[in-house]
Length: 284
Length: 284
DNA sequence: GAATGAATGGAATGAAAATTCCATATTGAC
DNA sequence: GTCAATATGGAATTTTCATTCCATTCATTC
Image (cartoon, rainbow over all chains, first blue to last red; front, side):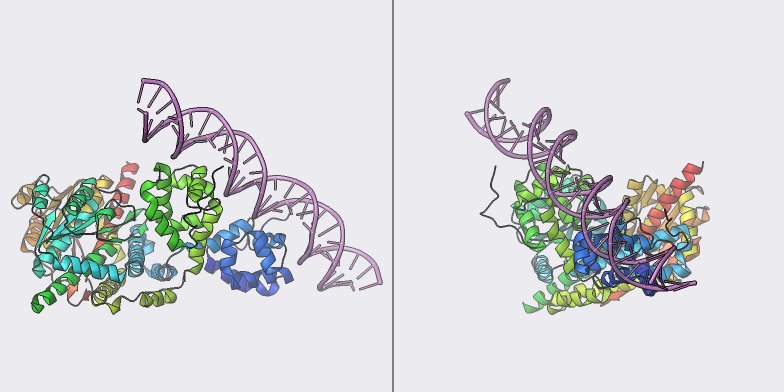
């Protein structure tokens, strides 16, 4: 039995695999070269197809695919396929590359540095994500609702609290009347009792959801106070109480999520509201 | 044998499926709703995983996945999976393509949209900026100081407050002892009086500087409590009281600055500290 | 509180897919 | 042209996986 090559290591990502294929393309026998060409021309097919379907499409035998994979050091076709799948999973190949370039001369040498890089990359990804997932018309409607409100009630607990506290700071500077709900226990209900349908609320809650936030939003919705919300899942209990809601999933690094994208969103919303208020005031 | 629903047709693409799931989520039984939530939150997993692996990850039985698929009119899990795979096929993965997709979803058509785009772009710039301006060795030293501290005092006011409040939340989850300074007036001094040289402080202050924050940092420094700080200028009054300090300038949009990069930095620092603490504890 | 129907967990089943193996073909060296 | 080594096709085998089935639990109604 022939041992697999130990001199050249097995490619771990698509780029490495591509490089290996291109490098050894010339020395490959006919059918394997055929597979090589096919795999680079139709990477999606390799990712999604079965050995049989790909074999048919590439006009080779299934066994040839296995041999091809083994030729490049993989155990079998399946493990090679993982590389092609991982390629599609990566949402942002751009930033990963950028990070690799970064780590060449700095951070990753030190242990904590990789954590730092990881969060920066995650933040970039989050931003890309909101840029494409936030519907501009919904944003416009949200701004409209909140700009017309007399007082804006900001509802947030725990992980979401920094967002609303930042908005509170900005509203203060921008002379927008607001009430920050969720600080001291007990007085929240009194505050919310004062809200009328001429006001509006902005609620933020991420999984695991704070039940009080959802309850407070529901309370306001029942009293015809329009609610706009920011959450990380369409299943958030906030969604059903809201006139407009945004789904914003922060990318994570090692399971921890920062609030970078949420902060950008919050600031955009805040400034857009203030700007619209000013226009509304001038029109009168 | 029950016939499949003929009244509602089977969703043919991801958007239709998503809509169908959202519409019927309320009436779904527990486990199926669990699958519904999982499938929308982790579409990539559904696309590539096997029924068994997805089931484990979503904490249900494989048979539940089949039932879920059948519930929405599919023949079995496999045909539902095709929808999730098609979604990935259509998606353009490259970075250049993503930018194109962004302008197709054009926010700038609507007035508020340009504000939104502006803040997202500013956040990207801020992140690029910290990636290059934060010195990894300084970061490592800061982590070291704060990880060795008994209690971490978090000092921030006004615009910086959301950062420290988020760190407080994360420290709580990560079981790191902390004190959040800067909430209620008056008790701050009492809190800080308890700090010893075995503790450490992390102070955040951006221009215009809150004078109390600087004063508090100075007070601690005089009493040999090591201080790490985050600020936006080398001329910040915080710098002189600090053992390590970071200069982090958030990019602005129309004069307004968000906290996106600061949040990424804060989260990285927090997690790095917690991670180092764990290592220190194990070594003992 | 019992009875009924739906929902769920988990093992059994059967289908489909990857891999292996062997016979045959092709290539290259002498 | 023959031999040896390598490559290939295709069937056989083994593994993996989706699906089905049944016993049990859970919720609902009377």
